[in-house]
Image (tube, rainbow, N blue to C red):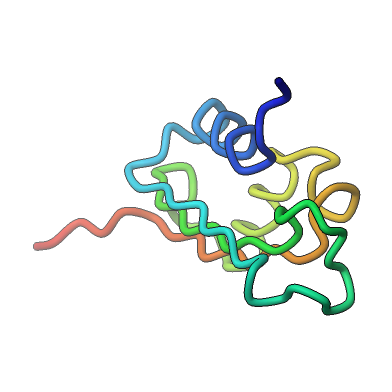
Length: 92
């Protein structure tokens, strides 16, 4: 059985960034019947990721890093991807 797109994205992001927080939220049900819904139930996602690799990176740089780590998944296999990428906060 083929692994889900969400599971594949999780593996790629864990390998690339060793995140301190990672959530992959499947938003596809909210978009059923809309443009980009391919019927697989894996067309729209939100990624929430926190990783040391994002320290001193701009929002655009962080998003590019995440998209780069995911290879052909965004655009090819996922229609819409919201990325919330942050660096860990260091209080004090």
